[in-house]
Length: 319
Image (cartoon, rainbow, N blue to C red; front, side):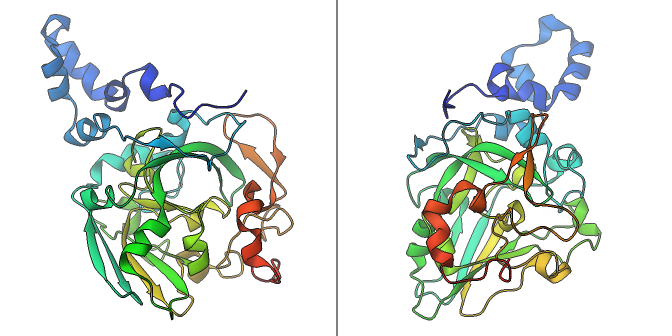
């Protein structure tokens, strides 16, 4: 059975504001009594961050560029099992610490080798191109994977606005740096702020999504709010989160995990079951919610869209 992008998510079965702030809500409700809980009063009991996120839906059309025939990973798992080292190095803690991060207001600056450098606020970003909802496989280097309905538009549409120069060859992404709000940045796990990069042709590929939401709603903080990039044929750490700056350059940019351990994390980091991580195999993956492992697909199954970009390259050397 093919998954429908508009199928009910966990957040729609139980109203999202209730389960996001359930402890605070229940504690306050116990003190007030059920009779006192008008709709307006319920809204007052929720944190401002929760109210803002719970009430924001994104209008998007379904994209033909979508993975079909695979079960969607439940919303609860997508938003509560996260790699977001800015908050924590484990998977469950980012969701618990996320309310302390303020993802609005927001701006993204684009500079470097472009003819029209610009700074976009969040509202302007939402108007760059029509929003699309795309279901993509998401494969992490640790060996787990998900199937997620993302909302966004092709990164190419944003880069076209600034008109890359003929000399530009790479795109560098810089994520937010706010140690006062992001507990993980108070530890030198990585050289903050987080940095990632793509070759320009990779950034312009139709699959590369400038992402503002998932499951039809704005991105939760722990998933890289308010804007991130999704590069579905690469391991998850290549999909930079909470982006504040995009720079076009003629030189391969430094990236955080490559700086931390170049032996284990190459610049390209394409999903490749034939190239093992030095500490574990990449031949199999565990889809969240499933008991048994499955075979890892070359380029995460998106080879028809991307394999041509690497023709003639040694994908074992350029891992």
